[in-house]
Length: 146
Image (tube, rainbow, N blue to C red):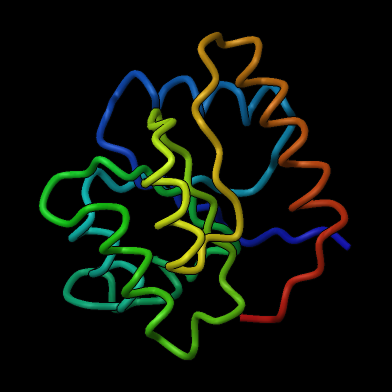
């Protein structure tokens, strides 16, 4: 069962955003990709605060790709907030970070991450990751209706 719901990328590095957009496009992921640049924007978006209150224009995502090293609120702060909101229990959160630190890994899973991925070093490997993501999370995974 596929989902057409949006994907949310919370990433402050423009190069990483570009590479992710390109990899998802080349992997034929048709879901809209929404990009936010910092942790506070992610909290506002998911909470429907301020300019993000219109869910038609700013729909809840099926999956959140979450970097850890973000301005204003860290990825861990965002993840903790998400898991404190009962309505987001089914939300898939994939930590996508450059950190290979055991502390970041264990803390992410302790806070409720569904997956922890270290950003691949080459565009080709990122494409492979995007294809695997599409296959597992978007084609075979089952989502609760938003």
